[in-house]
Image 1 (cartoon, protein in one colour):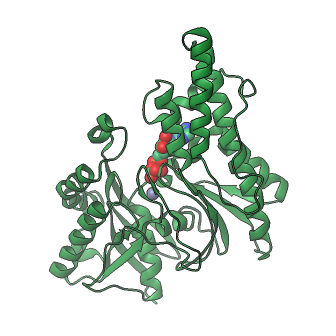
Image 2 (cartoon, helix red, strand yellow):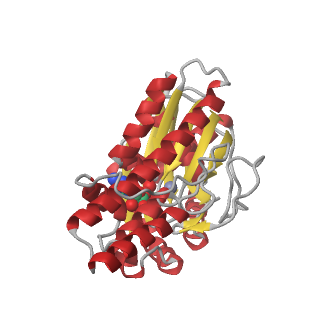
Length: 364
Ligand code: KG4
Ligand code: ZN
């Protein structure tokens, strides 16, 4: 086994073009560079990510990103041991842009090629940031993802449940839109909710009455729309306080569902008798203080450690792809020029495929 592995990672599955260089040495990973070009401004007028626009922007930026990541690490392609790339799941045009770039770099340099599952990238991040040992429990909760996973190994995950419709970040963004707040909606809704009364409006806690860890967030948006319209038809408009109360009620419902479903996921996870039980969370919604507080309380009660990677590594980035590439490299898992870009790629193939597609692409 080599004691030092350095990998260039590429990510382009959604609306961030990213490249990073990560080195594994002395049993741990170090991020030597991480470059992310977001596309928020390009999609701002459309109320969601436009796949065609995203794909074109990735094609324009991905090689520049790779060059920048190498330059910032003060290394050249010749210093790499492999090129790792997100091969799915995601918006297919974007995934293709990354896969084609990685194949070009690999063919031109002779470096091995490693295709990485984007969700595995998120799920393996706490091993890069904190050296977590398997098995650990993971909650991915962002604008495009919402699922509980047990990570058993770099290439072995079991999915305990997830959203059957919208991801929570999407629901935050739609709530902001319905209330005339700015995008991305999560931070705006959280800010407004600070001065709100979470009890004034009774929002549903979907699927809590059903066993298991599956979740649903699309009904919340309809409930919010109804509550908003009821206030508007009664008073002729919304006051700042009405908005704050609506945001607080909505946020409490999301945080409540995530906490309760986490409690159930933890019970399943603890049945494995992990030596050091941990719940780690990733994704933009993990930045929400109410959501975090709910998860922290559940972990404390169940005797689990709670961790969250720094926000820049929770949201889409290429350091997680380079790291997942290092994990695959160490297992001897490489790909050839036939590596396919996949719009859907469930991490746990023993589970039935999820239907539906989120704001940011297929839910895998
Ligand atoms: O992980 P992320 O950057 O992108 C992907 O979805 O891949 O997550 C972005 C999502 C957005 O929907 C945003 O509204 C939400 O995370 N978000 C938040 C907060 N900050 C970002 N949601 C709730 N509270 C926040 N403070
Ligand atoms: Zn992601």
